[in-house]
Image 1 (cartoon, rainbow, N blue to C red):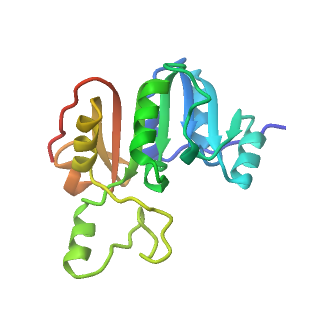
Image 2 (cartoon, rainbow, N blue to C red):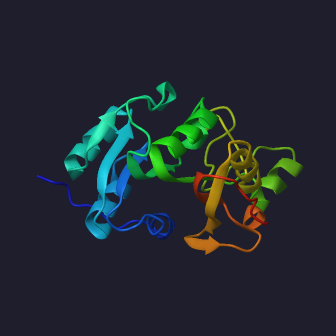
Length: 206
């Protein structure tokens, strides 16, 4: 029996709205499949999740979400060019050793890519570093010695990385307490969101 799902949080809904209705989606690091399940039910999408954790695989299956067990650090060679309309990386990029390679692979496999990650440039994080400590927040809840995040970055860092890899940023904004932040997002938002494709990039303000 398919598991009944709960509604997405407001910040997740902001990300989901970037996905066109009826899109074929690949969700990298899909977790328990909640986002992909929402896209299928509410936006008429199809597609697959990619996950490595056994418990998350089981949760996806319980939801009725198609899932492939794969270590993303091994790459996406099994998928052809432009085989999906959208490739998602929601809270995935910061965990990868091959983050830059995976970003390029996202743009190769998908006609568009969407990434979301904790924004280290958020003002409380900056204040913590000024005080000589690594930040511990709702979005970055771990101590420096036990964090699963092996990368930290800001909105501006990602814009520079996108330009380096010739990716065109189609949309970018911050998320804070479920609200989209488009004015000075690099300082005012705890999470960063980007939608991109192959092509020349621009750097967001803030």
